[in-house]
Amino acid sequence: MILTNAQLTTLATDITGRSGAMGGGLGQWAAAKTNHDAPAVAAFYNFTANPAVSVWITNLSLRALTAAVNWKDYQALNQNLRDTYMAISQICIAGGSIDMSDQGTARGLVGMSGQTDGVFVDGSTSAANIRAASVRNATYFEALFSSVGGGTLSTANVCAKDKGGNSIFGQALDAATVALAMGW
Image 1 (cartoon, rainbow, N blue to C red):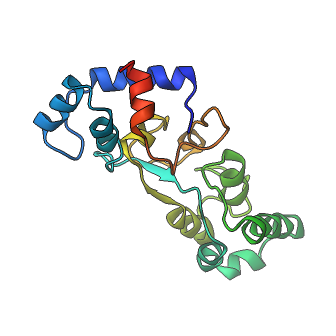
Image 2: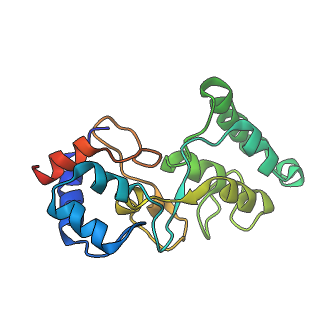
């Protein structure tokens, strides 16, 4: 993972300004920063964030997707929406999983809160089931690059991409990136 310069600056600002412990003791966090212990700082950022922040997963399987669909919802779809569902499920077959952190994919499949632009509209059983199968609690690192906290899932929860175009969701922060951000 290679963060953009802006992302490195955001990370450095957060490390410098963060005074609370993350998944460990406050003294351990302070010591890690003071001692420029990049592996320890990275480890703290890879703990599950508290308070919880929900993020889309990057690997929704076809099995999980089909288990989440209420087939009565599917039967009620018009042919265009059925075709869209089938195209999205083909992504699973070709690539092994669906990256729900991609805004277009998430919006295409379940729409967004209060909207009706997805295959399964907000309020349908299928949309609720797919959302439930497609989210997890973020790490502190992931939460830092999620624009909405507190568990509300909307288009704003789609994560930033690194320099390589990969979602930050699902990636762990490493010591080399901490050292680069902090100039250690």
